[in-house]
Each structure stands twice: as structure tokens, then as C-alpha cells.
Length: 282
Ligand SMILES: C[S@@+](CC[C@H](N)C(=O)[O-])C[C@H]1O[C@@H](n2cnc3c(N)ncnc32)[C@H](O)[C@@H]1O
Image (cartoon, rainbow, N blue to C red):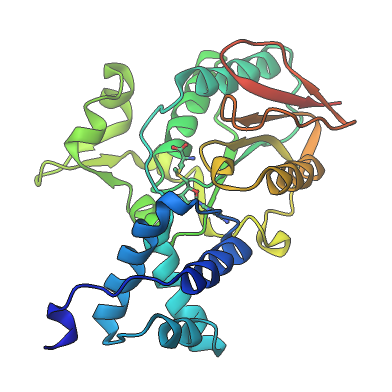
């Protein structure tokens, strides 16, 4: 029987270990035993597309040279959870808006206001942030002078993000004010992010584990939600420590509520708030 019609062979314990180690080493993502079927399905589907029928053979291909790197970037896209939505955690997004409004009111903005959205997936998060930041500048009657760097490991997610086109089901959940001001309906029923928002966001492919791929400028806000949860505790801490180095004094770090429970840093103070998890750089 030809391979494409056969059921995928089961991953042996050794193969599961080998693949999950690779995923953790390269992307930080730590799979539980329950995700074995998921890993097997995704890897075997890709193998099928390439005509491989042996997990070890395909593994050797992935770890081999430049072509292995190219293939890895296709596979990793299938293995990451890219779920996201506009204004996903509204209190965190409002928190950034309020922080910016306070800076504007106090005339504290000396230069451009820069934010980094880490693990931005298909762009809904950085675009939501750009919309509220634009509003903060408008309310303060100031020219919008801000930029957002948005990074992700998934090239496929970034491709969607860069087009800025979204299906109706994603946009209909956005508040009317934002929907009417920052989206235009296209002939195909999709919605396009307005150019004034799009031009504020610069998407880049980066693995948060590779320090050299991370922004080298100092930031006012680092926003990282629903990504660290896939990493081990010690790695979450290391990444947060690396974020601190990239924050301006007085800059803030906003992470997903409850994603990290026991992290402290001598240069950071936790901001008292029930519905957001944020820290300010001393
Ligand atoms: C569940 S999505 C969260 C998207 C968005 N932050 C939100 O909260 O809606 C997690 C994102 O993290 C990205 N990601 C996972 N590991 C990564 C890594 N090592 N470096 C950069 N991005 C990563 C995934 O590709 C995915 O798009």
C-alpha cells in the first residue's frame, strides 16, 4: 500500500523523546505526554507531504545543514499554538493605553514610544495595541509618535500579520468604535487594517530564545502573553530577565495573568493590579 493511504506509524518512546527534545531546545516549547498524538499527527502529516515514512529519517533531514533549517521553519509552524484574537486580554491592553496616556499628560515622552509584542502570532495583538495607542495620542491631541515591533517564530503567522487582512468572524468581535475607525471591509467579505495602524507595526521573524534576533533598542513596553506558558519555569525566568535589559527605566513589562507566578527581579517592581500582571523598571 502506498504511504499516503496508510495510517501514520506510532512514535516510539525514543522517537517521542527525540522530537520533543528538539522542539524544546530550538523553540523552548515543552510538550507533555498528552501532546504525543498532536506531535505525531503534525510530524507525520508533514512527512507524508514529503514522501518520508520514517520518523528518524525525517529527523535526520531536519537537523542537517541549511536545507534542514528551511524544513524546520515549515514544521515549527505546524507545532506552535497560534491562537489569538483582537483585544484578547482587554485589561492588559487598556493598561498599556492608560500608561501611555499618563506619560502624555505628564509630558514625559521625550522620544518615540516603543512597544515590543513578543509572540505576536498573526498580528491581532500588536494591531490592537496600535489602535489603543493611536487613541491615546488623539485624546492627548498629539501627533501619534510611536512604533511597535512584533515578533514571532512562525513565518506563516507573520505572513498573515503583514497582509493585515482578517475574516469577518475575527473582526465582528471588535468594539464598534475600533471596527469603524480602523478596518475597511473588502469585496471578499474580509476586513483590512487601516494603513495608519499598519504602518506603525514592524513584523519580524525571531525566536525569543535567540538573543541576537531580539530588538536591540530600549523599549517603553514589552508585551508578552500566551507564549511563556509553553516553556519550562526556569526558561520563563531567563526570558523575563532578558526582557528587563531591553526596557527603558520606567518602562513596563506586561505578561499574561498568572503565566509566571514566582519571578522577581531587583530592577523590577510589580504593579499593584488585580486583572493584569505588569512590572515597572526601576
Ligand atoms: C498562543 S499564541 C499567542 C499570541 C498572542 N500573544 C496572544 O496572546 O493572543 C503564541 C505565539 O508564540 C509564538 N512562539 C512560540 N514559541 C516562540 C519562540 N520560541 N519565539 C518566538 N515566538 C514563539 C507562536 O508561534 C505563537 O504565534
